[in-house]
Amino acid sequence: MEASAEDATETATHVAVKGEAAIKQEFLTTKDAFHGFLDSEWQGSKGEKSAENETPQEKKDPSVDEPDCKKSKLDPEDAKKTEKQDKKRFRGQNKSRPHIKPTTYEEKRLCLSVIQKNGECKFGDKCIFYHDVAEYLANKPADIGERCYLYDSFGKCEYGLACRFAKAHTTADFKTMEKAELVEAYEGRTLVKNSLSKDLQYRLRKRSVTFKKSEEYLKTLSDNKDKKEQQGNGDVCATEVSAEPKEEIQHVSTDKSLPTCPDIQPPVKTVGPLTDADVIKLRPCEKKKVDFKDKLYLAPLTTCGNLPFRRVCKRFGADITCGEMAMCTNLLQGHQSEWALLKRHESEDLFGVQVEGCFPDTMTRCAELINNYTDVDFVDINSGCPIDLVYKKGGGCGLMTRTRKFEQIIKGMNYVLDVPVTVKIRTGVQEKSNIAHKLIGEMKNWGVSMVTLHGRSREQRYTKSADWDYISACAKLADPVPLFGNGDILSYEDAVKAKETGVSGIMIARGALIKPWIFTEIKESRHWDVSSSERLDILRDFTNFGLEHWGSDTRGVEKTRNFLLEWLSFMCRYIPVGLLERVPQKINERPPYYMGRNYLESLMASQNVDDWIRISEMLLGPVPKNFNFLPKHKANSYK
Image (cartoon, rainbow, N blue to C red; front, side):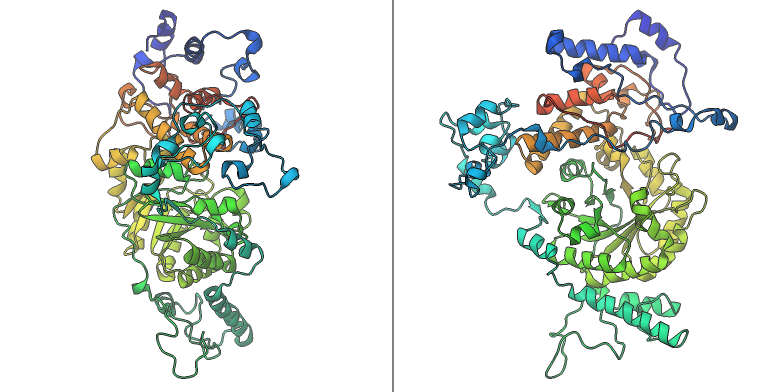
């Protein structure tokens, strides 16, 4: 992209800053020139608007929502002079951010009885939604496009007249059309599994769901506690679930049968002898086996690791996918939003769910619930979440320092699950005090099938480089249990170096958000210079998957837009390979201001929220009048 002579002069004097990516001189520019170019081109493409018709969103200063550039670390004396508030102003999470529910973008919706043609509305005159189709269409926002992805893909759109692409499948007399052949092809096929049924939700809320196996395990814990109180340091039953004596740990973790203490009754009442047919227990060798070796693992990413995003990554070669972190207490209470995190698309052939909790009883019951009502290949325990909300109650990283509870949780979940239990941990809690190596040796005996180690402590978050030397040492300790390494992988070269450390596989988190085609790059050992049009096609696939998952009505469109914008807050950090002075880009290198090879490439490089919204409007139409967005995360990983 050509820059003016004035800009070129400024560009020529550009001095490389520590922690800044090296981009070819001809593409470098200044902040003002960059935003000036984007705004002038955007206005030119849309046509000049009159000032009175401009919305507050359009009148805003173009760079007002963009974080200040990260600066290199100051000397200790200079750092003291800098106010603490200014230092942390643009780091970490945007707390107390404005949150507008997608339901508020449509003042009044069409009644479900009209959409589904169920006859009379059961709420009658008390119903607050439209029943008159003509009146609804007169107030409905304009359609986004001429084609409906759901109609083209599945032969029908269940959102009917409420669909924001309704023209594609609506007749002149307001009837919804169908493609009989496509409808028949998908009939009886379940594309998404693990949905929460109304019956199960009702029983969970009424606490009428039974957890038989969990109660058996928890009874052994209470019995063992009572015995220890009575006998002190005396002899205890050899098969009790305890950390002592150490020589018995292996026996406990490898025997899936019920504890055989004399005071524990058989699990079923029998008239004659107790046979295998009465009680069937899976031993570890009979549990479902998962081959984790040499796989590429897409990390369970909160907010951004949703089902549509995982589908995009599967297309590019991700081998293992995992749902977003779900709170075990919310799952047990039947929260619809939490159960949505367990949903699995048919394309996810090796899929697990990640749960977070801090008590053996809730985690064990949650595992049994997942085992009985969902289809998963493994269950992952989150012991690496650094956020205060989770850590302060003893979950996430807090479990790493509560080894007694951690052991009981792992053994309990192993006892009730028919699939492997995996664990994700960090190096430790404090920056200079690694404890993962101590835990890994114990976890092998507790029955863990795979460990994922993020090479940073809780205190470090993302500000320091991942410690792959430490991950390598832990991989040797974990053998024969597979250990996956995680941290700072943004290219196939990073992946090759990671594999040389002796890990069984690689987990990719932010690298997949910045460039989801990283899985293809690793498998094909190449740097892929993805064009801006190809990236827009990837985003278009995501929006189509989002409309399929969240709906093509106004609520679904705005929910898809919200998750798209969250993803763009990471994707804007990608620097095209053709613009780099030195390949590959490092994950902790900040991109300077640069002009792309075309307008779209420049637009995708912007870290301004308004420019992300412009990209979303290319795919999902104009934003509603009362639209407001602030990303959940601010980049604090740059040195």
